[in-house]
Amino acid sequence: MTVFGPLRVDLPVDEIPKFWYNITPDMPEPCPPPLDPVTKAPAGPDALWFFPKSLIMQEVSTERFIQIPDEVRDIYIRMARPTPIFRAKHLEEHLQTPAEIYYKYEGISPLGSHKGNTAVAQAYYNREEGIERLCTETGAGQWGTALSLGCAFFDMKCTVFMTRASHDQKPYRRTIMELYGAQVFASPSKETEFGRRLLKEQPDHPGSLGVAISEAIEAVRKDPKAKYSIGSVANLVLMHQTVVGQEAKKQMELIDRKPDYVIGCVGGGSNYAGLCYPFIHDKLKGKLQAEFISVEPKAIPSFTRGTYTYDFGDTAGLTPLFPMYTVGHNFVTPPIHAGGLRYHGKAPSMSTLVKCGVIKPTAAGQQEVFEAGKTFARLEGIVPAPESAHALFMAMEVARRCKERNEKKVILFNMSGHGLLDLGGYSEYLSGKLPGNWEPKQFALDDLPYKGKL
Image: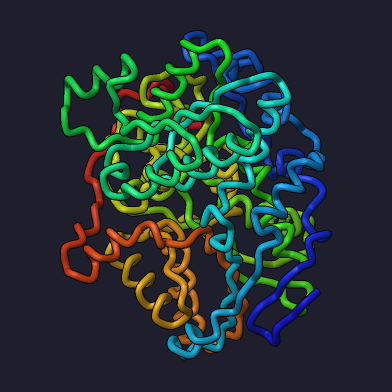
């Protein structure tokens, strides 16, 4: 253990968790099962044919803890785990708040984000089952980057469909994926039937994570030695990310702190679940009194303005129906710079926790998010990814409330990645050219495959 005053908390490498935490057995109410889109009956494991068998078993597992393979833990060390917790002392002083603000910094990874925690695991299990190629989607590119390197570690091929808006906004993300050996296509692409159809209907389609997922699954259907790999939403992904929260619990204990607020951005749910699920475990057991706040973009407000029902996980309707908060799988998500949050729905387990009131959902606009990112960069020296800046923005809002109430609270948020490959967005912001705060008036809820709310 090394603690540099109250400003940084580190863990030795032997403190990397040995197990992933599965929240399923601790849920306040069971998460509804996926449904067959035709019969509307509960879908069995075969409905997840695009995953390898070992990961399907993790997805449906009711075990509280699942052991992390030694080979995966070894790579976690190479990926800079355990990651540090920092105290944002200069930000506290700037806000003149009595609150203490801490953040778990996943941007220290060579990938620049938390995504490697599941990418390495998924590549490992696929390799063990003889799979030769993984196909996936990516928004801003953090997930595609992570899976590209995960495949490189295990000598596998990787195909990435990158949402067109992010592909055009962030060209260096494509470069780093190709440097790791991946094949990258702007989505919608001409590589799939679904992509060609969308481009014919709308040549300037900005793409979305739902569209890119459809293209990746279609590519898997055509290759018997390929499987699909997902960067968020699925329970197995959220579970793999819990190494973040397990480390954070130990780090906060080392400095004798318990968080009063645990905050994270949410697209599909992986980075926030990774931080908050181990803490939610303590709250559900009566060991912690904390408020859990998720932050989504106002442009794609599934939690705050969507509906809780069954929906497809992709735009083409190739997946089972999942219980989720959604704005509709056909919703064309605005081209905000936080590409990793441009997804129509939310993870089933997190949706259940929102429904039960365990997690409080909020939303933020693009302008205020970039303003928070600029402030943090000037005070703490780290340029946040636009996605992570959503969590930062809300942490600052909570700290301001603490000032108004003169409350000395402990705020913990997930700085899930750096923004050094997102400088195009920051350049637009600084020059006054950043598009405004999209707040859609209509969503794609009329053509949902399941009628009614849950």
